[in-house]
Length: 91
Image (cartoon, rainbow, N blue to C red; front, side, top):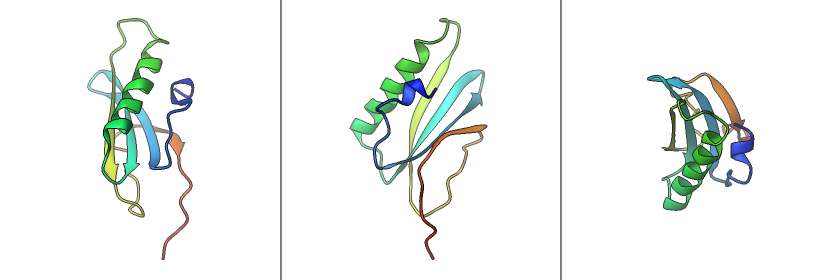
């Protein structure tokens, strides 16, 4: 997964979480604010890089999700953080 992220994070990317969902390897890219077409394209590119490391039988589903900082990030029902942006505590 880390190789799939090379060159993908933008300043708006708050975190990436990965795990299993409905029999597929799932990853959610959590962006600060509305997701742009360019960000969706970057998520698709990361998905392509990830797929290249596995046999064709492995089902992969990556998606981009809009969030709002400083709201806490939700793991979206998945298991592991693979990227997490530093965000100062806002009071």
